[in-house]
Structures are given as C-alpha cells and as structure tokens.
Image 1 (spheres, rainbow, N blue to C red):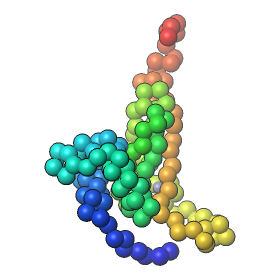
Image 2 (cartoon, rainbow, N blue to C red):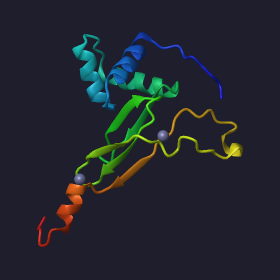
Image 3 (cartoon, rainbow, N blue to C red):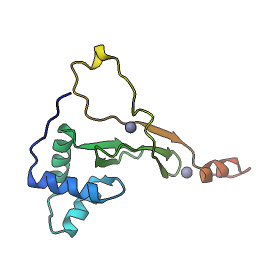
Image 4 (spheres, protein in one colour):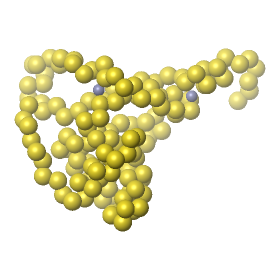
Length: 138
Ligand SMILES: [Zn+2]
Ligand SMILES: [Zn+2]
C-alpha cells in the first residue's frame, strides 16, 4: 500500500477539521451549517464536492442510512453501527470486527484499499417491545 500524504485545499482541511472535532458523524447539511457557524461558509454543493474529493484521497469515510441520508466521518475513526430499521436509532459498535481481516491477495493486489463500511440492521429494544404488543392497529 502506498503511503501518500495528499495535498488538501483549505476547504478540504476545514471540512476535515470539522469532522474531527465532532464526536459524531455528520451529514453534508450538518457540515454546511457547522462551517457557517465558524464563518467558513461554502455552498452545499461545494461541501459535497470537497467531501467527495476527501473520500477519493482516503481521508473521509461515509455510510448510507436506510433513509437515504449519507453520514461522514474521518477515515481513522473505524466505528460501525447497529441501526434500528424502525425508528432509525443508532448504536455505535466500538470494536471493528474487520480490523484484522485478510482479503484475498489475488483480488486486492491491484487495489489500493482506503476504507471499508459495515452496517448492522435490526430492531432496537423499544421497537421490538412495541411489535410484541397485541392488537396494535397501525
Ligand atoms: Zn427502534
Ligand atoms: Zn471497521
């Protein structure tokens, strides 16, 4: 694997800082607002364009929620999530089950791996209890 130190534009640096300062993941919209609050505002399309650039450099990871929303986080934050398909509540899985996984060399030798995603879906405690209640008409 190549150890690259990519050149970042001032906007990309600011986006990366914003993502790093936030304990949680951020959507493009949230980033857009956070940048505005720091008077570093840029248009929403510019935010998305720079996020894409950061992803291509392997600096930012993203994941897609069932709602279609996309959340971004710094690539070194290797966290995965348990998401409730009913209410969308998310729990962070602090251990990465893929940490030391070996991919078949034959398939990855011509591929510079930057990040991975892994999602778990199910019902949270609340929602599974609600589902068990008799005669609930929706
Ligand atoms: Zn739920
Ligand atoms: Zn992981």
